[in-house]
Length: 155
Image (tube, rainbow, N blue to C red; front, side, top):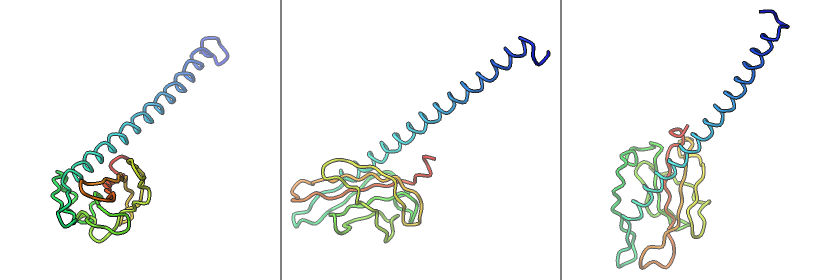
């Protein structure tokens, strides 16, 4: 096939357009899949946070009692990348054994709704953090519940 023949130009043009459309389609699918994976990860964090809240109650003396049944063994492994924490805004009341003596940054906690964000963990690992203020029955103020998971699982 000669370079300046009509057949060559048609085949070359079709090949270029196919490459462009396949690249655009691949990029679009990759972006959509990445967003879906991140949303599913956030839903998983939300389920874990709800389990933590369900296992919390205030004793008659106002002390926080906790009987979490989260079903996630990595919350027990030190510095695993999976952490939970309950604070009253200023001080940490309870934390997962995996957090060791570290603290999750809860500055992104809104007053009445859930917030998610990316933070750096105690070992410098990237974390996806879900924070929600919850007012327990019999409490005057909201407690800040936070659950974080290793962001590398999303990537």
